[in-house]
Structures are given as structure tokens and as C-alpha cells.
Length: 524
Image (tube, rainbow, N blue to C red):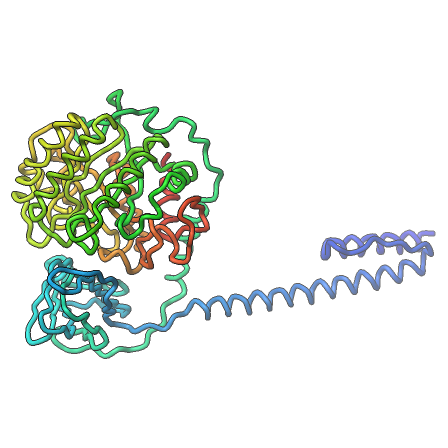
């Protein structure tokens, strides 16, 4: 009997061990004491063996998948090179084509490089009307770009973005563009991007994606219903009760080019899914089909009206943006601006959810004195109808020089000053301008920004974007992210293959859209 009990104990021990090693093992059903024990021991032994083999097999598969994943993440690139391309074109003036030329310089070496220059062949009559982050010289059919004071050095593993708006009868070919360091032409070399860098980018993107997936709130009490007409107190935007308030929104792209996104359903999905409480309506003035360059004025005014009506119905705020860019100086089309703001403020004089942005991005050598003079003409026109609406004034150098504006601001109430940034290009130098302006008592509104480079394209700089976000939070700055469209560029909030223009969901978002809207959702 003891022998039988011993055998039974051993069987039970082995069966228990087998069940721990393989959760799917079937229970013993034998009835013969000795015969069943032998069968069970053999089954237990077999199951342990199968478990070990299965474990080895799974480990091998995991290793294979890891290797495949690593290989798939490796991307062959040049170690030090310039990527030059024409990213956009539109009909210009005097029979010329206008366009945007983007330059990205990548330094994927182990050492910093200095004294860089880029050379591009350009056709006769090629003109640069705007340029950022570089100096330029055109001589004998060659456009040479060199560093400005803050980007002479490109650190190891970093990139630099610059660009320009041009006018030309023929579009330049960028195939023969050359990069020089210390006057020596750089030959392209192959370089393998480390997996860890891509993992970092993917991790950030996945975090932004997860932020957009949680259940949306009911948003039953809309921003305007709760906070009413806004005003400016010190450096802050405040609500009807005088409490600090933050507008968190998105900007359209040019409404003449992307009119389909101007609708109630699209704005509602942004409000309900992510907590957006502001839409900035960007109406270009100088580019092809702009308000002052041959565009259909009635159509553009109709789109503005559509946005004003939709935001009012949804309890959201709305910025009407006189979007100067290639026209450089707001005084260039000042007469048209006077007529527009007279007409638009008369029409919407009773709409308290509207803010007015009177000159998007003065540039091309435009001084603060130029902008100030323009503002001192436009603001009284607005004030005849919208006596205390918040007005946003652009600043020189693509709305970056808020520190200069702070030295001699425009006199008046409920005035704010635009600061724009693109996180991969604009970092501490622009952040310091912001701090100087606010320390001087200037109220700043970030009416346009993105997390890529200043061209609106290139790679996302998540670290810089997160640093800017902390500054926005710490200073209660209102903002509008660029841009609500599916254009094939990094700053577009929607993927280029997204066809959705109304009921926008997480699956429609680009990486930029996931970052921006995911963070707005966290802030509400």
C-alpha cells in the first residue's frame, strides 16, 4: 500500500509540474493505479519536453522578429548632405511663377560642421522675395545660401532647415544642388541611421496616438457660453469674469486652397473629440488666388462667413486672419485691408466670439515702424464697429520680433502681439524674445506654430516641441496650431491620404496632428 501511495504522490507531483509548464495540458483520466501512473508520467514528461521546445521556438521567433524589425528600421542615408526641393508653386505677378524653395542640411556624422553654404543653379530673372534662416547671393545663374548669425554650426546628428519664396519665369532645377563646408564641396557618403533614434521618434508618436484614443468628453458647456467675450489684462487673455483664459485651437491653411475643411462638422469634431475651442481662419492676401492677387473675393468672404457662423453655433472662438506672407509689408495692400476690415467688422459688429489678426507675418525687411504705422491705421477702422474686440498685431521677421515690438507698442486696449514658431527651427533664440517681451509687459498670442521646420516640412523635433509646450502652459499662452488640411507636408494635421473633411477622427491624423490634438486634449 505504501508503494502505491508513493507512486500516486509522484504522479500527482509530476502532473502538477506539467500543468505549471503548459496551461493547456489535459487532466488525467486513468483508473488503473499502476498502469495510469506510468501513462501519466510519460505524458508529463512529454508535456515538459514540448513546453521547452515551444519556449525555444518562441524565443527563436522573437529573435527573428527583432532582427527583422531592426533591419526594417535601418534607413540608408548620406552622412552629410543637403536636400533641396521646390515644395510649392503658384501663379505670381508679371507673368512669373511664384514658389517655395526648401533646403534641409543633414549632419549625420560624429562631428559638428561650420561655415556651410549651399549652391543652386537658377534661371535668368530668378528673384528671392522672402528668405528665412539664411543669407543669399545671386550671381551668374548661381544662388548661394550662407549661414546667419544663429545657425553657423550644425551639431553632430542634427539638421538645419531654411527656405525662401521666389518669383521666376522658369522653375529652378534642384538636381545639381551642392553643399560646401569651409569652401569644399561635400561628396555624399552612405550612413545607417541607428535604430534607437527611430525608436525614440516612434515612441513619441505612439504616445501622441494614445493621447487621442481616450473617450471624448461631452463638452456640454461650450467655451464661449462659459467664458463669453474676451479681453486683455496685463499680459493675459481673460474671460468675461476677468479670469485668465486660454484659447487652444487650430489654424486652417489658406481657405482659398483648402475650402472643404471650413464647415460645421469638421469644427465640431475638433471640439468634441479633442477640446479645441478656437479656429483661426487664414485668408491669404498676396499668393496665387489670394484676396489681393486675383482671388475670388466673394468666395473668400463667403468662406470667412461660413467659419464665423459655424464657430458661433458651436460656441467656439474665431480669429479672422489677414494672412500676409509673400506681400511682405502690410502697407503693400493697406488700402485693401482698410476696406476689408471696415466691411467685415460692420457685418460682425455683434459677434463677440471673433478676434481680428491684422497682419499674419511681416517679413522681407519690414520694420516694426512699418507695422506700427499700419496698425495705427487699421485698428481705428476696426474700433468703429468692434469697439473692444481683441486684435492681434503681427511682428517683423515672420512674427518673431515681439521683443522689438515691446520697446514701442501700439497704444490701445485689448491688443495682443503675434509670435510664430516652428519647433525644429526656432528654439532658444525665439524663446528668449518671448521672455523679453512678456517681462516688458507685452501680451503675446501664438497665433501660428508647428513642430517641424520653418518651411512647414521636414522632420518633427519632439524635444523642442515639448519644450515650447511647457512654455505655453507656464505662461498661459493662447495658440493656434498650423494647419487643418491634408497637404503633403509635415505641418498638416491630417494625413495626405485622408479624404475626410467633416467627421475627423484619430485615424485621419498625421503625426503632427496626433501631437497637437493629443496635447490639447490633455489640457482641457
